[in-house]
Length: 338
Image 1 (cartoon, rainbow, N blue to C red):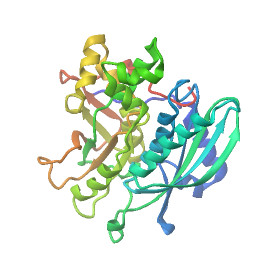
Image 2 (image 1 turned 90 degrees about the vertical axis):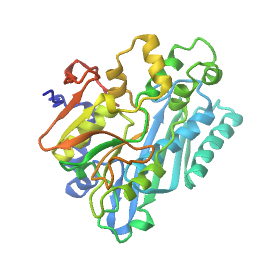
Image 3 (image 1 turned 60 degrees about the horizontal axis):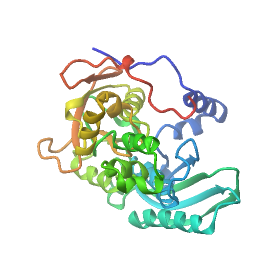
């Protein structure tokens, strides 16, 4: 059996642990999921940022930046199995940016908000040397869960015996970014000219799985807990986080993970390490979850079973040949401060 129990504490975790130590138990109890859930107020709150040169390439269409800053925050609410409602935007922009750029950016943000019934309610505008975008998302548990025992999905809710699930292809966004980085032509045109346009769009215009999360509440056994995360930092990161917080072992089979036709074609064309891309790709914003299902044999789209939660600790992954994958051989997944 191969387990993923890294002894290295990355920089991001060090900072989070420091915040918990300094700010005390009340803060610590609300940190650890994609959102903070204030149960007494039925309020979910999260924030995400995008910095030019760190989270996106220069010269990306402003429309896509507007869509994405809304989408990645909305995805945080989806990853709690909840309803996104309101968005606050902070945009720090260079003085030289044209009004036409800002107009396209706002159109992208507004289109994403409209798609998911989210209302922009304010924020802040400041000047900066490069584009820095941040948003705060507010949401609530779905109304139909008002009398339910469990109203939100947490990383500590995984239980031995549950199935491990995902909503879609993992690795598309990673390859989309690779195509953009290798492009020799204008980035504003490459998304349509590429033979792998869907992979590029998966990176530029991620689609939060709000409806899929809501659907899953109807597919699980009554009065059982639901665990969810989004795959913003990759599948392996999700498995590790859930394993650590729920104190369980996560067993996954790569053969069961859904992959898009375009992704399979690209990996074959470039002779890429499939396991590396599937596990560490990141920025797909698909959902990874664990649940006791009512019906495992007739699971509706987009949900797919990719493994099972077991008693124990760490991660076990079967490769495409059915052998235990040596996770130490994989490159590190994306980390904000490494």
